[in-house]
Amino acid sequence: MTALDKIKAFVLLYFSKQFVYFIIAGGLSALLNFLIRLYLRSYFDIVLSAILAYCVALIFAFFLYRRFVFPFSEISLVVQGRRFLLIQLGCMPIVVLTFSSLSKLFYFYGLGELSELLAHAISIGMPALITFLLYKLFVFIK
Image (cartoon, rainbow, N blue to C red; front, side, top):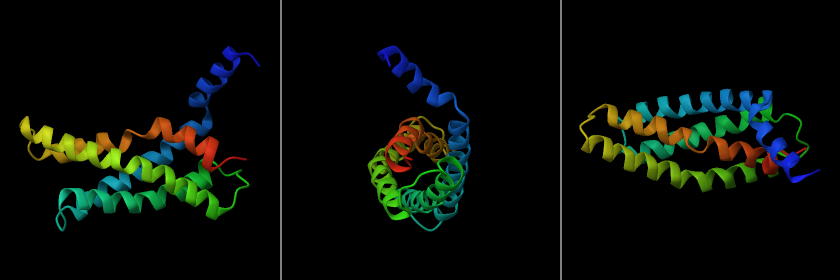
């Protein structure tokens, strides 16, 4: 297989049925994350509510990905869970820092109540392209 064939195969991963399922499952998890954070925001500060919502949505996402996106993996549930958590822990600081920074920036520019909503929507969608490959090649491998 030539280098060009490898690049083509890599790019085609993003134009697959599996990637569409990944986006749907991730979108549902992101929606859950978003709604939980909105609910928790009335009880906790901005960062803690985002972290708690992220954790709940993380568990939901794992089982959606395992069942609907990567159902053919032969790796044990425990190993998959450990690897999934490792990747998510790596992404979590990026999501939380982006959320915190963007919400402050949006407040500064006068977006008021929309600041947190926009910052959260942007921050939870950021890791999708990289995590798809990591999950496919490292977590839920055949």
